[in-house]
Length: 166
Image (cartoon, rainbow, N blue to C red; front, side, top):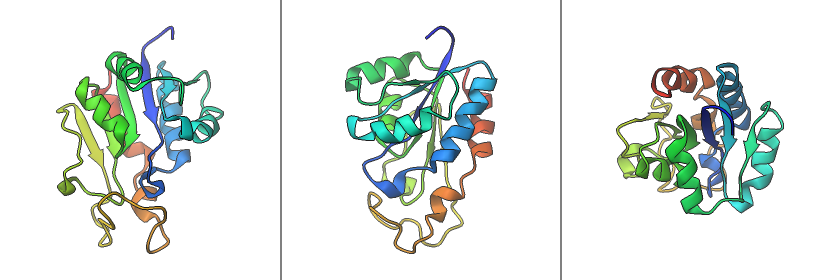
C-alpha cells in the first residue's frame, strides 16, 4: 500500500446487516477519486462477497480471509477510516480509534451494539417503523423489502467520511 488508505468491511454474519454491495462500491470509488487506496477486510467466509466488490473498485486490495483479528486491527490502526456494517469490524475499529462510518439496518444503537469510538458515526434510516426487527439481524428481511439497508445512500456515508477521514 503506497498511499493513505480507507478500509471497507462489507460482511456480517447476518445477511440482513449487510449494506448493499453497490453502495460499498460507490463509496469506495469516491475514495479512490480522492486519491485513497481501498483495502477490503473480511472473514474467510466473506471472500466471495469481498472479491465481487473488489472487482468494481480500481486498484483495491482484498485481504478478506487473509488476516488474523490482530492483523486486521493493525490495518485499521493505520487506516484513515473504515466503512462497515454493524459488525465485528466496527468494534475492532473502535479499539484502535479508527474513524468509522457504520451502516445500521435491522438493529438499532439502543440495543447496545453501537460503536463506542468517539470518531464514529452510525448511518441509518430511523424513519422505518419495522426497526429493529431483531436483536442481531437475521437471514432475511421479515417484510421482504430490506429497506433499512437500501435507504442509506452512499452520499450520506461519503459526506460524513469526507469531513472525518483524513
